[in-house]
Amino acid sequence: MKLGLQLGYWGKGPVENHGELARAAEAAGFDAIFTAEAWGSDAYTPLAWWGKETERVRLGTSVLQLSARTPTACAMAALTLDHLSGGRHIVGLGVSGPQVVEGWYGQRFPKPLARTREYVDIMRQVWAREAPVTNDGPHYPLPLTGEGTTGLGKPLKPITHPLRSDIPIFLGAEGPKNIALTAEIADGWLPIFYTPRLADMYNEWLDEGFARPGARRSREDFEICATAQIVVTDDRETTMAGIKPFLALYMGGMGSEDTNFHAEVYRRMGYGDVVDEVTALFRSDRKDEAAAIIPDAVVDDSAIVGDVDYVRAKVREWEAAGVTTMLVTAGSVEQIDQLASVVGTV
Image: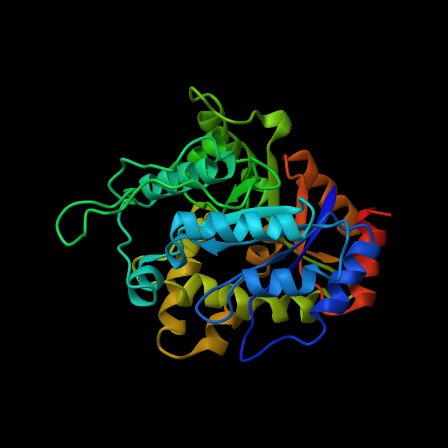
């Protein structure tokens, strides 16, 4: 099992020790470090800034929001970082949700799967640099023509020759259709809330994508890089209580009351009643109560909290379910070293 360090996105301001954590993760044998974005700090700037502190670990985004950048702009950023890092970049992409896409970026949200397919195809055209980049699709037409344009747009190839003609793309997907698309067109999957208990269901969706004509990967060379809180502790109760506010935010506060893709993940796990109650409390500004009513079983489904033997046994379960990398958070060098020792990267 490989480990990835999730540095995430910023809250009110920068996190001062991320450079130290990146260096520690590399020294401890981690495979990758990842950054994220919501509607504050972006993912690329911190990844480049802290990535310069490393020499070996892969540098990933988990995830970039499609609507934040045109596909060619994203491809440019990716090929730039790939050059600067010596070919260590992983592009992690996600569609986000309508509240962010339309409310923050001012872009249209409908047809997220079709938009993803076009976006990825354009990025790969840029990196292949075999011909000027064009796209006939309705979402990202290149060149742009018609009413409101000058008619002077022309297909272009990137001036810069990419270091790699095929940079890995992982997709953050949660629903069955999006997961199948991920298996068809991507190199890896970035599930934010994964549970080995539902591995058969996930594998059915993935297999649908692998079986499609032209699928890029098979199960043998496809990566599943799953986010998981792993905490080695003898005080499960306190630690799990500390995780529940995070789950309450994603379960009850992300998206709108009736359109929250994260909440749907927990409904598929069988926690529909919990989702409804958490959502009602969270949206009534009773956030502490929303967190408090989340059962420990909900935390146990997508996190690993316990002593060394318990953690090692659970990690083996995730690995047996098909997960290739555990994407974890850590606040200190000591915690990184502990995770590396327990999971076995060194």
